[in-house]
Image (cartoon, rainbow, N blue to C red; front, side, top):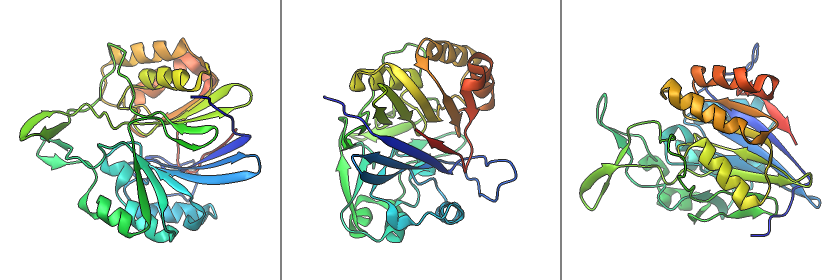
Length: 291
């Protein structure tokens, strides 16, 4: 794939587990990012995930003077409720027809945990495919990289290459009446490329493994310099051995900035800060990045 370039991009954190110091934003367990991508005088606004609390999301958008009707597409990084609950509510707020909703084909499967008790944690019935389409969404479900505009593309299904990365939580699904481990193959990320031959990687939870995601982003874009990695790394329950291996592996790439939060976990944030110093920032609601 020939990868083209954005002229500029901004990313605003609309939802995250924590908030900026002395800010009026509302936090929630989940993430949502608003990306404004510009190329050749064409501007598109892409919403990446919707968190799990629509009222809190709209509250923060109001404080940021951001109206839902500016959104041109929605990217869903994976099935979990803290990234998907309220897709239909957001489509209603946007009020458009045939709005692209981009995700992996496995997004709507049963996805559950059985400890401490049986609970579905995937897309809820209130956000079913039928309800998404009835409220103006048009589903673009693919396991391949999908170009949203030149310079902005999804990773598609991420190849699992490392021997130390894992999903990070004991998830299961049912296939042909058989209960099996769910490897979260629907976990996708977003890649933006720039004329300086750099990329920005935007993740939801990195269930595919952030090192795997970085490798695939470099392979997909053909660009090795990483301007920023922004999102969740799902190391919150990882043993220190895996955290150290992950951070060490990331240090071997040319990365200018990592801003990680949500499911990343305190131990991983400490390790990232210790190694990357000023190149690391904890992710918080209300942050804005300009590229």
